[in-house]
Amino acid sequence: MRGTHGQVDPFVEGPLGLLVHDFGAGTQSDRRRRIRGRLGGSIVRIRVIMNLLETPDKDLPLRDDIRLLGRILGDTVRSQEGEPVFAIVEHIRQTSIRFHREEDEAARHELEATLNSLSHGQNIQIIRAFSYFSQLANIAEDQHHIRRTRAHALAASGEAQEHDRS
Image (tube, rainbow, N blue to C red; front, side, top):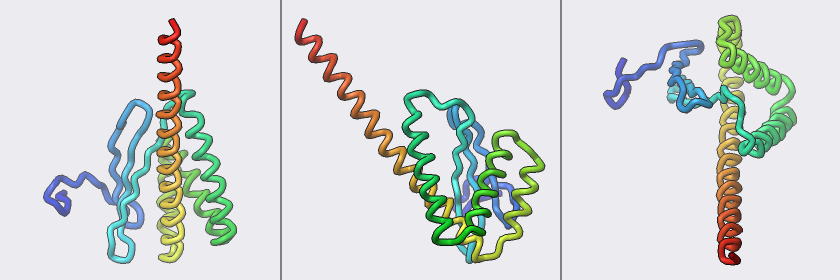
């Protein structure tokens, strides 16, 4: 299958016309999936990175930030879009995690059925919620990078001061 720019397009058609491609392990600690579908004639691509291994201690603040932002987003979706939309987002999220972590075929079929049952308006609400989460996770990663860079700089300046004293 050829993509729009002549390159090989390794996506496989899935539910709702979504095309799914598993990129395998990007690093030892994550697995990347890209999901592509059509919404109102436009191609929509969602890239999902699932952490498959334990997060090193240095990344615990990042994980905590992402969880906090996810909870705040969940509360916002619940208050702005309503409990039914929040319930669908949570169901899709939990089923996706079960499918990716355990390679559970029943979860895949459940996910397909859920996605196929959504109306056009629900698709927009669900895509919007997951897009916001992705943006918030990216902001948390940027902040974590700044925090880690600052910690390394402080450690280096402390070592330089100790070296000057001796």
